[in-house]
Figure 1 (cartoon, helix red, strand yellow):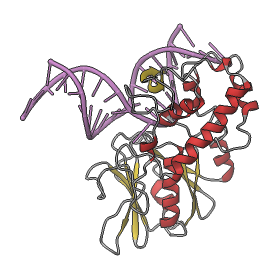
Figure 2 (figure 1 turned 180 degrees about the horizontal axis):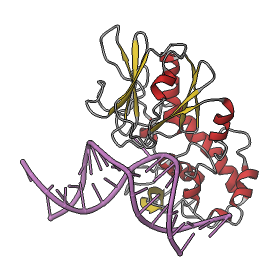
Figure 3 (figure 1 turned 90 degrees about the vertical axis):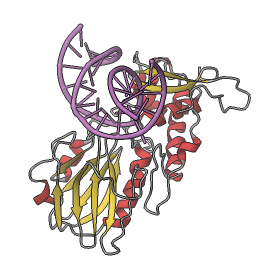
Figure 4 (figure 1 turned 135 degrees about the vertical axis):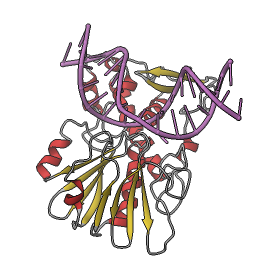
Length: 287
DNA sequence: AAGAGGCCCTGATAGC
DNA sequence: TGCTATCAGGGCCTCT
């Protein structure tokens, strides 16, 4: 599910809800996530304050009082629900579920605060929680990651040198977190459509102009998605109870067999499995 | 070193 | 209706 824009929306929601709040209690109902939830997890969080919530790539970073961090990755199906105890009414935020209520199953972790609690739900259990004890370890955790799209170091010079001699196709690099951080399967297709570049094109064949396009359009697509509140294939809700709507702006994703949206293009949107993931592109204008 | 492919899981949907 | 097969937005691991 969640790529950079969706995780950004979740981050904003969490900051509104839990920053500066103190953790009263933690309940882990199932430790078997993508990574085993460490045994120290509950005790480590208890009585610490959430100073703020940041995001790097598709990771949420909870800054804890005392200098530690809690990383959260939502995997494919992870959702975070905030439940307000005082009002006794459940409401969700940052959820990809189509119900405003908490799902019945797969509520693996609860972080309980004074008047509300955070519930982590994840049917496929590809998400995970990690404790990072200090800033040095945090930096180390992300040292193998590529720049984020908005980083000024992510520019055509970087892209061109990274692609030198690379035989792999472009699509694969866009979802490769060691090249660029935060792009996933949906936005990779959307970005390449805006660039008018075929996802199957070998990376080494890109010229400087095309590298520029890649940089500009990566930023453009992700920024638009954030502004629209993320994409919801299921009914994504943000903190205000609004659904994200970027899926209505998809140019290629989920549009197999439909006409290309470009004015003078007579092409059709094709779906093809590229590097084991479905990839959507126009068979005419993406060269 | 780089690239291809498999695997971790459950649930929704398509096809028979 | 009820079965089975396929696919899903991520990332890590192994093998060649």
